Length: 470
Image (cartoon, rainbow, N blue to C red):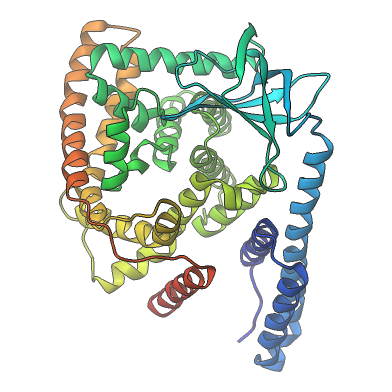
């Protein structure tokens, strides 16, 4: 027996240690305590390992500990770099100009804008505008309001309900603006053909759009555990890649098809925006394409971890301050790691009608992975979410297909678009019925995770379960 880790195992361990270092720095844990604990763990592992194994194991331990230290260092480096490149009169009212650098994100109380401040000031800022504001990506704004300091290192300052005047348009990346306008035109076609809630739900399923969602529908989706339906996922990316590959594979070589698929993947991400779940899905889609082109086996484990590490390079704060990022990756990790042992424990061998058994295992695994975070962040977790997901997930692929088909036909033939809309409406009506029905049946679980120790113990026992049932 030889303890020689593969390159994939080493890359996985290094990325995981790097993320752990960033996570500890995010939470302001004492670096020396974390580092000393990691060293003790490494020494303990080497001490209980046979001599033939220790010969190689200590090298990997040193590499992983170095990655842990690098992660902590990188977070503080990023926070320092961010602060040095931000020049804003924080803590008082001021006037400045800024360009909206991402697609506005609507909520009940605010229209949230990510903006880049223009000279003579500099840096990035979060603007919480009035929800009825007509603002778009690339708008040049004149802003007057009280600038608040960021709550944590590495985060952007914010301004709430300032006075805003639009002084220019089309100041963003032209291709991004064009793709966003195309998406808005498609969503407009959805609204012309389908009833309000159906159009909003189809826009969310196909393109991850949160526009035109009524507060009642948002609450119902949260209570029924179906909010994830309107987040860009690997399935959306898979459809884009598969469709492009099938269309181009008959006319072009494999290499040309690969680059065309990458181009469409890039354009699709420009269209749907920079939400954490979408970026994660895009990076993993790219890794899957790259593995296929290189003739390598695609490792979901390595792809998930390396994708998380890549995303934290651009913004280390998302590891603890971006719920979309946290929930997206935790649910995916739950599906990847908890799915097989749960399936084994339940002795599931067949997928069932419309894959209901497979969907049940997938939902249960994802829900178990995110439950502490949902309870700790939103104060609720409903037991009916698993049943609601089983009833809905089997219909999502066909709904997504009709959504993309309707997006094309809306510009080609109104008659065909209305016919396709009727078919999509049957599925969307059923999905909305399930959402509202299970929202009324929502049963909050009497559990809480009000301490880091409770969350640690929960995930520790999950890890033990995975270890003994894999």
